[in-house]
Amino acid sequence: MSSRLTEKIRQIREVETSGRGEFSQLIGIPKKTLENIELTGRAPKGELLEAVCRQWPKYTMWLMTDQVNEEAGQISPEIEKARKTLKQTGTDTD
Image 1: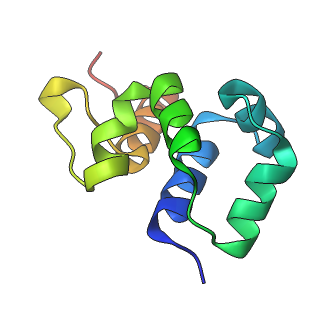
Image 2: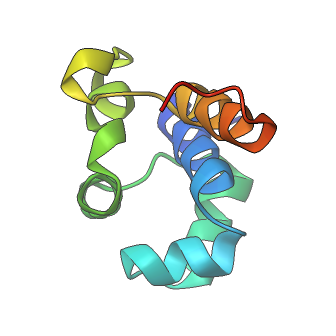
């Protein structure tokens, strides 16, 4: 059974990187550690959460509290995915 934090880490990985290898390299953990966390559903340790928040600070509020505040730059992977889709289709407003 997957923990909620494990699922959130996976969502960030999927929207920000090409896979487990790149994600692991960016946050400085062995790929095998990430695989074990994702496959077993074991909750990630604090050090891993800190590394994710340092690499992608825009997800800190969502990762830790399930809240977003777009005005403050605190978003979820779902929001980022929608932004990327809009940019690809040329319908973004930036």
